[in-house]
Length: 174
Image (cartoon, rainbow, N blue to C red):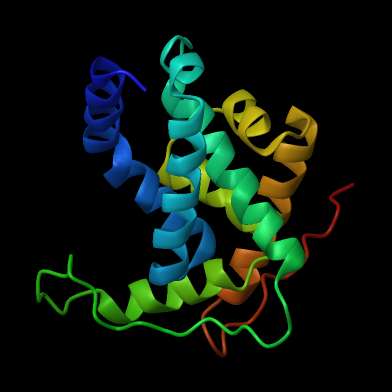
């Protein structure tokens, strides 16, 4: 690789690695796994940097690699691997308000199936459109809508207030 290509790749990593790491973390729910996932993805981008740099949207291409790597990991994850909950969050500012609610919401997101979780992360945290999510996850836009709807329904159940009565069914008026 030429020196100018290495400098361009280094600038790309410096500019986009935080956003890509956030996506990896939100998809995996595990800090160390997200680091590994991002590193593997950036190695793949580095190997094809001349082609990637010439693309219209190199970040979208890198995000797609990241999501595909995560999907591959979910498929091949062995039974002896188990994620570890890490409480040492370096980005935490020390404020305690809403921590309990954040933990509850995050636990519910992590309880979603991997594809639904990926759709929720890309839609709500990365603010991608349905078409962009479909391209990143290599699925039809209708499937993205279906996963988003199913995830929203599941999250509503998981986040329902304990002891809250379900809404009564409306009767049809004549």
